[in-house]
Image (tube, helix red, strand yellow):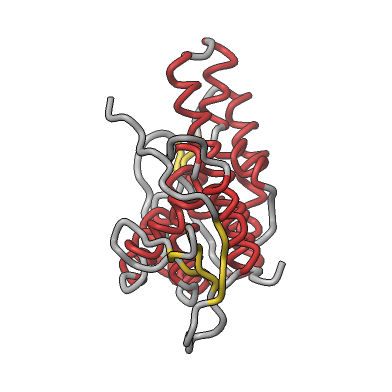
Length: 243
């Protein structure tokens, strides 16, 4: 295992970006030097509270820097390096998730799982239908279902104007849950992070209840949950910069 890098800085602070023409941006500083992403871009965000949260992750590092304890920094770096300039591709990927969304694939049996899925997922589908006119089709069993183009167009209208950081964060929420609809519903304040996470794991929790948990799988799930919670927090700070 490669040893973690030693901490090379003492002071962590934030400051506004000089000469920023696209609105006020806040950058992260280590010993008064700007932090850069792996792609060598300045780490700067439009939310002062978000910049402070990132600074706290760096302040919390001990003698060595452990990226596993810096999930929000990872999300921001990925958005700056991998989403900025590629927004269309990321939007298309999120829409593709909606086209085969977890919430649209239902069990045929047993009856108690069918009921649990309906209770967790039907309200989200109803929200999408009533709020922005997206009517998604359901499939029973494993056979795929093609979603109406109108539903995907309506969904696309909800994400096409998002900035790079919002898109990057929404993509993280989507991939961790397997559901663009759950991610968007949480992002729009229709459900808490805990509720969205539980809804995403209805099938898995049903299996655990009947067959027991696997220790390794539980550990992997917990790591994903931490990342999901971090993405949820980033989303809130990005979408409400003055919060």
